[in-house]
Image 1 (tube, rainbow, N blue to C red):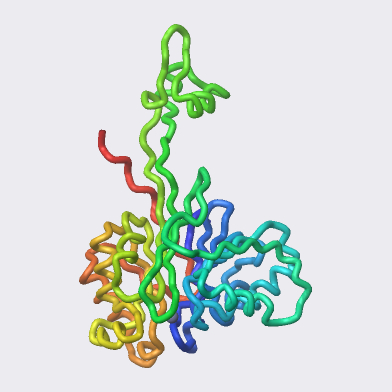
Image 2 (cartoon, rainbow, N blue to C red):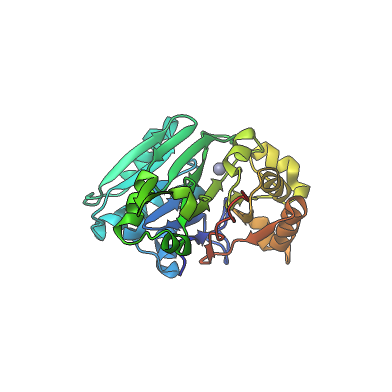
Length: 313
Ligand SMILES: [Zn+2]
């Protein structure tokens, strides 16, 4: 099991179907669990997917249309029931704080969840730590909506052969990483000599939006881009009217932003009645992208692709 993967909890947009639950995604990232857009039924989908409430450390809501948030009351109640001990951070568009409050208190239960709300009021970093930065940007939908991305800072990978040749081992490795240089015998060894660049990983999460600059900015250099593709290219007019993307537009965002893996989701129920409908969306996205496209299915686990190779030189 990978330490960084997307657990798909649901892939339907406005209405669920027999094969697709309302939206919901858990991004597992080392010890963190980012729950994006818990739609109705998320608690039970978590059970089917083998995800527990205590794995969730962040809740990130893009906007408050029902398919993106009606699962929140159930998930929070379950966290209380399971007595999840850690702090759970919750991000959502700041304008709709009262909707979040209503959802949080939709039912009567003993609320022992240690929830820290972080309403998102503008573009930029929601939080930044040594292992990741969570960023949000405002998207273009009918209601306040934001997209998210998780960015791991670039680092360096230590090369055991070069460390051994330089006579550095044990605790000195950590010291060299912290201090950048170290005396070994009678010479100075620098971090650069015994390591190589390790590009950080990025995952972008773009839900309901029209094509807009923020979508391209979020997707920039993403190793994994999770993107709504509610409609097929033929329904471009509907997509614009309702503030959504077509499959072709999702592909275009991936292509122009240099994304590596495009995960399509949030499908209109119309394609469930149409044999090959969802496959057609994947084809349209692939035609615009040229890279790898995955059509998300409920309960699937999609690993974040392996790191990019370090840039030469
Ligand atoms: Zn929406």
